[in-house]
Length: 314
Image (cartoon, rainbow, N blue to C red; front, side, top):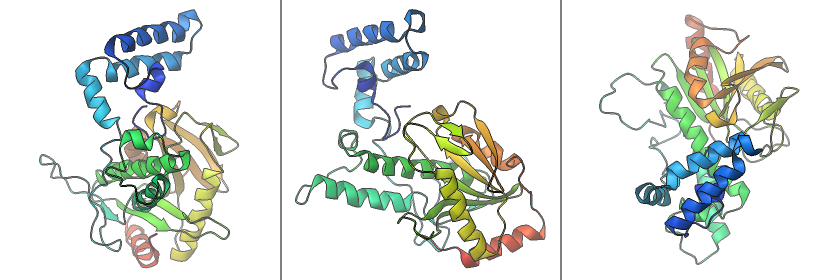
């Protein structure tokens, strides 16, 4: 909520102009509380959003901090390695945490970040200097497809941080090329995670709001196309190329966008699929996707070797 390029800003939730004075802002907050309170016929979700918006801009100090960042304003890319063929992404250093990290290859969110930077400058127009392509004021005025591209890049980077902290027993490949016949330019699997609980294809998404499920597919106002079916089609491409068998597929979404933190879809086209709130991802990867086949021993080394030989990055 509020930390996605696709989400409404705190000012939009309170229905005021960002430049409004503090007293007008306070009056708008009280009005929106009355309008959205469940006891007066309002919507409970909107009521919570109004309260959260006030937490972000209700004091001069909080408002100044929010205006500087809007949650995603400091969306500088994470540290990437020198090439996509090596351990290409490293989580930000944490002085007090010396635990070994997962083996990581490729650049999480890198493809979409590059596309976003190119397209945002193209959208602004030639000859116009873009001092900060992540400026919230600029991002929120951009077309939805550009905001969605940045939102997905941030989602992929957030998933990469979660997997990185799981430790050396895990291996992950990011932005893996998976060209599908008739597919678009972003034919890729966001993450492939090899763990003792199984081999998983992982899709990181941010649709900008709550989602539901119908007949094994994700539904919602911000959902375009068939993300689960597309993920499985790309997973099959990688499986054939590497000669490996995936145990399941995981779709990772922002915590606020799922009613249940873990929502199994059952087997879709023969593959166990689960929707997971990002906060629950680490536990799912440790315990395994329901119905997925666990692997261990020499099989892990064999699968890792096959993927290392076959994986290509976008």
